[in-house]
Amino acid sequence: MFARTVFAARRAATGLLACLTLALAACGGGGAGGSTPAVGSGGAPAPTGCDASSCGTAYIGIMDADGDFDSYTVDVVSLTLTKANGSTVETLPVKTRVDFADLVDLKEFLTAATVPNGSYVQGTVRLDYTNADIVVDVNGMPMHAVAVDANGQPLTTVDLEIHLDNRKQLLISPGRPALLELDFDLLASNTVDLTKDPAQVMVQPFIVASVDVADSREARLRGPLVSVDTAAGDYHINLRPFHLLTGRLGDVTVHTTATTDFEIDGTAYVGAAGLTALAAMPAGTPTAAFGTLDVEQRRFTAERVHAGTSVAGSQFDVIEGNVIARSGDQLTVRGATLIRRTGVVIFERKDTTLIVGAGTKVTKDGDGTNSLTKDAISVGQRIHAFGTANEASTGEVTLDATAGRVRMHLTKLLGTVKSTLPGSVTLDLTSIDGRRAAAFDFAGTGAMPAQDAVASSYDVDTGSLNLSSLDVGRAARVFGFVTPFGMAPPDFQGRTLVDFRDVPALLSIGWGLSGTSAPFLQVDANAIVIDNHNSMIGARHFIAIGPQLIDVKTLASAPRIVADATKPGTFAIGEPRRVEVYTTFADFTAKLAEKLGAGEKALGLSATGSFDAATSEISSQRVLVEMKPAN
Image 1 (cartoon, rainbow, N blue to C red):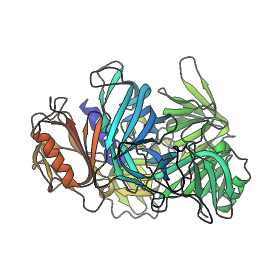
Image 2: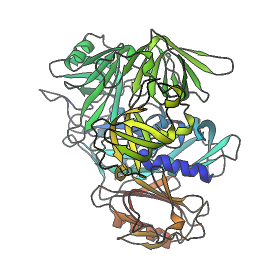
Image 3: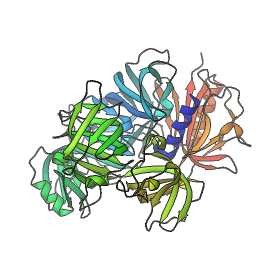
Image 4: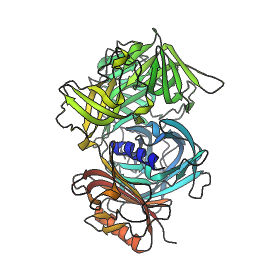
């Protein structure tokens, strides 16, 4: 279990900690005159008595970042908001099946619900694990796991209450949009036991809420086309997230720019030409937009738009995932998600075979020309492949894309810098899109066998990117595209670099199922100092910075957590079926000390921020503590 926990930390510490985020923005009024509603103009059923003056619009999105799960699919049944006077409103009109592990660094807009004005002090999220599909990564191979409660019994429906800080409640009003972010921390919420057959995941949901916190991650809006306004540069959809085939969850406006990339029925366009092509499509055409949300204006601007048959599941069978091997025109995708044209979505635990040919059309995100061939697809590349899927009697799936298409997506590397030269960096590769490097077979990637990519010396072409912040022996992340098959070196074409200073440190420590009443040497408004020699410390006791692991128990001085004053903070105390959220470190530590003084025990702690090795201090904007109530 320790080795597994270590790998979970390595993945989480890159800033890819698995989470559920639901962003609710109250957007009042309509789009009269030249003011189009930015993200929501209603659409979900309104409570009785709601009008433009008495209600706002709650805009809800889900975000997940890669954790130690290949698939974590559960049903989100409801999200209820509660006012101080006890009155409630349901913001999610339909049950939605979500694979949180599929939303890597991405926020999916879920619904636009009409919500009565007022101050909301808590929420209740209901998750249904009855038909959960949970797959854990074990040494690079997917393994099925079942969800159980603390007593080892199969998990069904779980309700979790989230209590907001009195200093920062959710205020819904027509005149001022609000934003609520719920962070479902999979690392804190799940304990994996690989000794059981099948493997078990003990679930104790830990959801953290924060109000009016801007999130800069890429967002996705999906749904059928309603209309296009080429003069205004935008289009409207009925929001229909994930792979829902029916239902209307709100009317949404998507804004575009002169540089927005479009792919419509497999053909690439840029800017106004793309919007014109979209305008020629009939109402009801499937669309998916990727871009950013301006939190102040609640305005969504698309960087990329897919429409028609370029949207997964609209006409073709589709697989999405990373290529782990290639031999000729046969590619292997491990842990792929299969989206049937019927709308059925399946996580494939066995390797999936992708067949390409001369007729396969290949496109690349952000490339307006997209004059690519099948040989552009190499080992490591993240893809969507469109074709016809066939399943063998043994369960293996083959997708024939010889008359279909493959879209290449931005791919993410994590590794340790070995060397740098002008225009290039060599990494000791840890993972590709969260999947460990050992899972990839790089045979055939080079111009000759001796030039095949090697994980321990992975060559990245960085072009004109600034390498001055990269330090040898330190972690780095690179975003870009894999070099076409058979053409390495270099092995990868980098678009963006993130050095170790921006790869957040994760402090993770656990005190076993029994917990401890004395986890800290100090807990007050200034700091939390962890007793790193406490005898109850379990398997989790490390600080992870990318691929680097630091054993907390070996630190010369006890690790000290202080609040990062430069960023808004989120601090939470979790108990069974309840989470209390604080926006100030002083309120958080005061309540933590109070609970310990009343006999509660600490089960686990995680803190994310920047680590100073010289002082053993973590400056953190996010600290979570899991508590066990006194008997």
